[in-house]
Image (tube, rainbow over all chains, first blue to last red):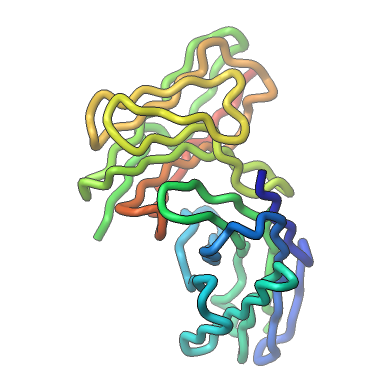
Length: 112
Length: 111
């Protein structure tokens, strides 16, 4: 089955710096890659996603890149702010009707 | 706004007890999921359901069962709770298998 690895497990950056979180997946049939953010004590929420027919997607300070050949995708956060501090999960899923496999998560701390 | 409600935020049970975790969504989503969240392990899928009375095993179904008698309600059942089932349990729903909408979570402690 699918296996999703995520690195680093913890990341600390200064406010205003960029943060990058990387994920790899094992199943070449996976074609949808969402990122979820979970603030302390709250539910995970979708922040951005990418489909396998796209190489990059941006939404304000957040971007995701996908390399299908290498089977890895990354989350980029620019101009980090304290409210970006959270646990971030990447995930992969196959086509319609299949479940998600999540990575183990990255705890991002943005230091003022 | 999609609302996914889990009946209990915190539960403390004893080993061997039967435990019910209830989840209700109000957006007519056909897909519902139960995940378990443990530090360093991320979110692991226990069971999911794509329709009423339908269920599929996820990655870690052992020790759990589920029930979906109505479209809006998906229940997770621990027939005989054990200490290694102490965890955070998250319910989620989706209209397709794209965005998941999660509940607040149920933190279960088994003594």
